[in-house]
Image (cartoon, rainbow over all chains, first blue to last red; front, side):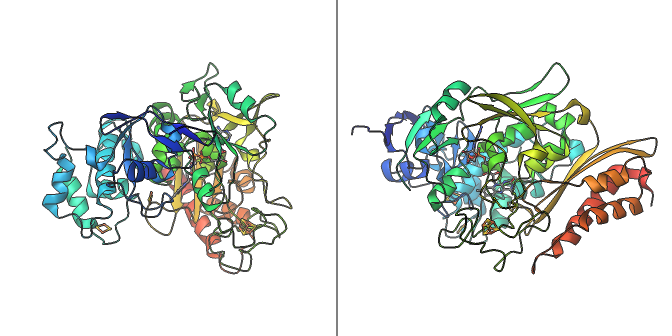
Length: 177
Length: 331
Ligand SMILES: Cc1cc2nc3c(=O)[nH]c(=O)nc-3n(C[C@H](O)[C@H](O)[C@H](O)COP(=O)(O)OP(=O)(O)OC[C@H]3O[C@@H](n4cnc5c(N)ncnc54)[C@H](O)[C@@H]3O)c2cc1C
Ligand code: SF4
Ligand code: FES
Ligand code: FES
């Protein structure tokens, strides 16, 4: 495939593998993952940043892939739910296992986004990032303890139409340090 | 979506030069607002100039004690930065009250300031909107306008500015730093966003092709007691119905200066100058706060379905003032 002024080749790493898809500049990262790379884990819920179903990790940080233009992410390291497992390719990520053990879903449509979001949120709390519900006086940059209230706030960017929230919060609690 | 060219800029000069003379270009920050509006057809650029990798990603202290936050610093990084957390907590709190963890990881300082209104008529090409298409009328005025402005609106437009961050910046007397092909300038955040007047299509004072390079947080408001409070329809991940940022300077039981800015009430963050003047030099008390805030909000002109916002804003402001004043405001 050649490129023209409206398309570009974009070197990326997806789930540990380098690749160079040629993308229409209009394509979101979500569409490139799902339609050009066959990675259908990340879901298209709203396509407008309002539901979190499309959440992936970009250089380790969670983001809504439906609002990211693929062309702008040259050189980035993308992890989708398909790439969270251990290097042996078998062992699930602890957050994935916790979701299974806690039955943290019904239809499962929001689940890949919830899981990627939880992985990102755990890293943010460990790095000492406060949230809206963290006591401002306790915002010292030290790792934040993830209470239920903290988990609910930090995962508020992921909607679940089945209302599996109680089990989702329990699953994340299980993997909280 | 219309096909577009894509250019990635690595320096400020590259970015402004790529934009010069091309009206149909847009700078791309995190894209969380622009890409959304492109999908809706509200924005139809022919060329995107990606500024997200410009070397404007630092938060740093300047020799005069002020703090400069670069335009490409992501909202989550700005909120978590020690200089912001420690000196300007109201800014951290406002950022953390906005959007979601995923969106804050992507959204930039520059893009946040320039995000467009969330008025549903503005986002719907099938509806009249003077902001999107001047002269077509305002669908919201006689339509669904519960979330719209109560202060400073015009016959032509009743939209609000949706940013939480900008409200804190307004209360902190922050300035926006701009770079155009013709040079550099700074503007107070309070003068950066416009009231709609007879040009609702123009949100801010930025000139075509001008780039936001950063915001400047002054030494004068560093370390003062400050807080942000936001009321919304759900506990998280929703825009403000009303919000307030307060920076309060009290010494020996006298208000030296109160800085109060409202969000969700107007086309720009609303600095409550009347209330601030009323409080200056007086003793902090619940009664003084109530009177000052009421005097400010007596200018409100609510619409058919949003008069609740006036009382909501008043209660938010009085509560935050009272809490910041602490024991000093005993009744
Ligand atoms: C579901 C949802 C919920 C949200 N909730 C909230 C909320 O509660 N509170 C809140 O405050 N915000 C909220 N937001 C909005 C969010 O904060 C903005 O979308 C974001 O801050 C925009 O930043 P960006 O870098 O992604 O901007 P972009 O989308 O990249 O750009 C926005 C505009 O700024 C221009 N631009 C970008 N950078 C520059 C620059 N350096 N110089 C000049 N022009 C520039 C672009 O051309 C464009 O016109 C929400 C968004 C979504 C999708
Ligand atoms: S309030 Fe402003 S943005 Fe909304 S429809 Fe009216 S003119 Fe358009
Ligand atoms: S599909 Fe991306 S947030 Fe809903
Ligand atoms: S499990 Fe069905 S949407 Fe969450």
